[in-house]
Length: 292
Image (cartoon, one colour):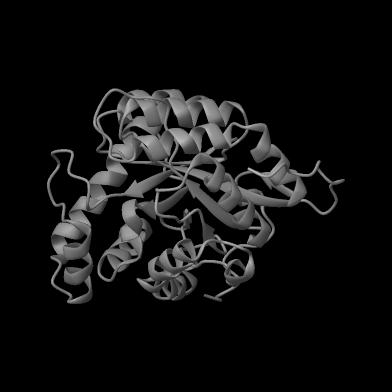
């Protein structure tokens, strides 16, 4: 990787939420998330509450209450034995064909909120979706209905998958741009309209989308492009893990992400972009820009 310049003097610093997805899936992910939280490299953790490592991870995550936001990573595609799961292409087709069973979807959402609350003792700070399923038709409507029923006037924020328009000209690799736009196209605008009608805050944009096939150096270069195009109130999603002996098709990419996020290079990139890692609630702008 080309040598990076030294950090520039910081003025007008902005907040970006760096969120670890898949917490609870296995111990390698849990250990990486907790380590990065302790290093102030991440500010949010999104939790797969049906994952086998969720109960033990949740207890450790409670130590970061108030500093790291904990959210529900709503799951309909990863089968941990809980049922009601679909392969992602089939789920998308059934959602857009309005073939999903509303009662079954609502029950699965209720159960996942209950599992989060049972261990954490509170409602989640935010909700997003494993493979972004929270924004799909039927699921998004049932999700908001369940939150209104369970939490009343409390308003966890909902992850928007809209990519920043500026990323198209930031040097971001074309495959990452296309994948980010495709994910947003699958429901981001509809979810934003629903969230605004019902009074739920959102992040402005989402970055961190790529194909998981990059080298560590290329991932850091892509990271620079993401940080160069984000604004206050955006979310950078990531999927780090420490080495783990179980089966995980993304293990190599996860290990690289962990090393990149704890590196000095990441610190320099943040400083040069005048960004600070922090909870989304500390940012000044949320859900205000509908560009795709």
